[in-house]
Image (cartoon, rainbow, N blue to C red):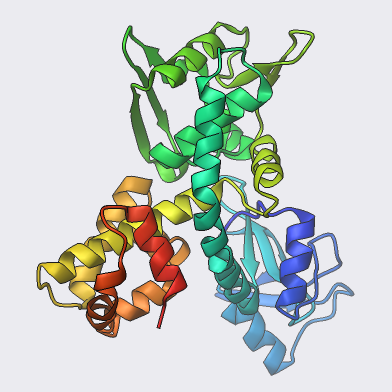
Length: 347
């Protein structure tokens, strides 16, 4: 089970694409009660469920026995199949299998467009950072986009900051910042208790961070409006800015997905040139290195951030043949261009 942080609109769209019924756990659902060494399951009308097919569906969800306040969807095609509370009282979700498949496909659907837009995004960021420091909303957001692009930090979520004391870019606090004359260090606990230690030496970024720190309040990244009132930058501010800039449905997460795929492809190319065999063991090493960059576990990195076609091409020993065919046409010494070329020429 995993926490649900999707917007309602996003959930409805994915459910529709997956041919599923959009539901939530305010709908009357199935409950469970202890019965011997297991559980008995009851409809919303308190009727004991005996149907073997329905019981098989419920048990296949694998809801941990320790979970409390368990709600099970009464529909086999509901996009959420169950919710419950874990030992820390965090709400956990179990989604329909087709939901995961559509989500997986959609994660990489706009990678080509993102790669094509990336040079323009970076040029815009550079132009904003080159201006005198005013702490305008656009300037502070561009400083944060720079950090997303170069440091791979998660965007952050207030829920995780409050419940788990784990932080991302938009939830960083001044206590996470150490400033010296020539550099800044961000040190904080991220998702899954991963420790982040990020050293920043870009002069324009340093000036913006130093002035952000001077604004009252414990949050780090804030901007000043025309009346000189301070406002905290939220994740939706960054996503809206990115979407307005590009006229594409990009989000902050696309930077991390792009980085994971770029670094994976780079290592696949390097290992192929070194004559290393394309096998599960070598790919595990690649994933472990990329996961370390993103502060992920290898399994999460592989499942959620690395393009599945790239994984298959390596594991099925097709990558070396692809590289041999396309090597004369590959752009030189540009990892982003390598990935953009691969996305355009998968075969």
